[in-house]
Each structure stands twice: as structure tokens, then as C-alpha cells.
Length: 352
Image (cartoon, rainbow, N blue to C red; front, top):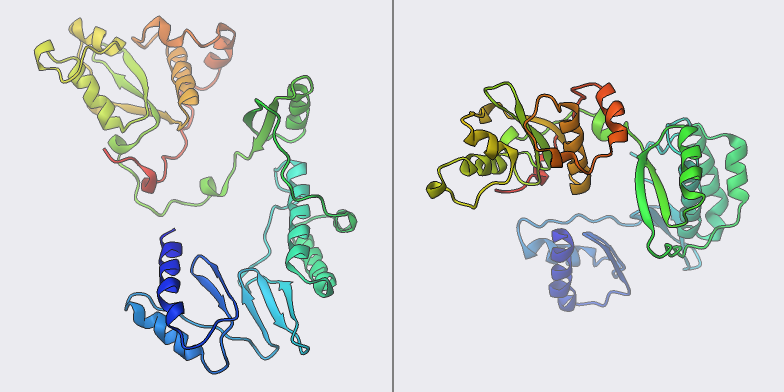
């Protein structure tokens, strides 16, 4: 966003001062496509680079074939003076897309191919369609798509690009994709309910596979989580918070102070009630059970954790009143300590 704002400001300041007129100027963030008079490129480049010492631009001109790339389009100046366009990829692009053998819903793979074909045809002039389609075939074969399927999709007429309006009061649900099972489940859940929409997601993502290169966030600066605080009596308290963990622990500590020393009003949690009976909580040994950014899901995970440890927690009975009893056997049959997902990106952690 800042690059876009700065580039707009530069153009407003520099373009009116040029000693020549620009036939056209196209911009995408800080990438510019300009048409300048011959032998005048150095003038505009010098003006841009003199504006501020920390803002330096480079230039690229037409090659010997009178073509120049801009984003994912190659602009070709024909001998007759006409401008044609062709889909273009950087040399570094390895052509890796959704693999046909990957654990993704089939319709997502088909939609990807259709969108790729439509985009390539839209960006390319008709005279380059055949050449670009050959590139598409090579790319899709590299990603293990069957040749017959590629030919079939290439022959299809392009669909309308207008987005379909969702049904009024539609509800969208996200579920992990399991091959064969998810298709049947989607049919069952949506057959008699037109307002319910199911979106499938993959469990194994690149974010989970690649190692983390950033410094981990300190435990007390984590947020959107379910936590467990042990008591000296052997029981524990389970809660959830949207704030930093240290903020929630500070609130708990404040709630068990003498009434005249409290910063806030009385704390309705079971932790406060238990502490008033003479018990001592070890806040330094607070444990993070799981993370969840969505409030509803976070509260659900809190209830599941309480139910799973119902004989070892001091939580009130109404803390799990929204959890149906029919799930008790399923919850208690799963591992007591399932692995928690990775903490949120440190760049997105909240300030206290």
C-alpha cells in the first residue's frame, strides 16, 4: 500500500514537469509501463531518481524483437505499428501449480485449469492463442494432468466471468478435505439445505511443512488461545482468551487480591472462587492447550478441553452447558494431549 501511495505521489509531482507528452502510462503498485519519445528515457529516469536518494528506479526497454514484459503480459510492437499482447511468465517460474495427484477436491483442480485457460486467452491476442495453449499443455502435463482432460478443457467454451450472487442468508462452513468421504458428505449436507455451502480445505499446507525462520513469540505474548493454570491441590483451571496470555493472567491475579486492592470488579470465574477457599495457583506454569482466532471455535475448544479433563478441573458446570452430551464418548476417546498448531505469525501478534 505504501509503495502504491508513494508511486502515485511521484507521478503527480514528476509527470507535469516533463518536457514531452507521454502517449500512455500504466501503473501497478510500483511497476510502470511508459511510452516515451526515442532517446528521452534518460530524462524521465533521472527525474525519478533525483526525487529522493532512497528511491531509485531501473528501466527496461524493448528487446530486439520489439517486445517488453509488463506483469504477466508481453507487449509486442508489430512491424505495421499495431500492438499485440501475449501471456508471459518470468524465466524463474517453474510452472508448479495444483498437482493432479494432490489431496485437493477434484472441482478445485478443474476450476484451476479453466481459470488458467481463460486468463491466458484473455491476456493474449488471438494470433498467439495456439502458442500459449501449447505452453498450457506442457505446464499441466508437468503437474500430472491427463492429456485427454487437458484437451477436453481446452475445447470448452469460456464461461461468463460475472460472479454468481450467493443465495440470501447463505451460511458457509469450512471442513478438512478427505478424498471420497468429503464428496459424499457435501451431498448429504447440502441436498436439502440450499443455504448451506461447504468449502473444503487442506490439512497439510506449505505453512505447516516449511520450517519457521522467524523468532518464536514468547508464551506470555501469545493470543487467541485456550490455556490451563494448575493449582497446588492437583486440580487446574481451563479458560480461553482473545488477549495476550499475560494480560489474562494479570486479570486473574488481580481478581484474587483483597477487595480493596482490586483494579476491576469481582471475577466470576471458578478460579477466583477456588482461590478464595485458600488454594494457590501456579501462574508461572500456565500451559497453552491450543490456538484459535475465531471466538466461537475457541470457546468450543475450551469446552472440549474441560470435558476431556472434567475430573481434574475446577471449572463450573455451566462452562460446558453448550456442549452436547452426545459427544462425550467421542471426546474422551481421543488423545488427552493432542498436538497444538503452530503459534500465529509474530508480525501479527497484538500489542499490549
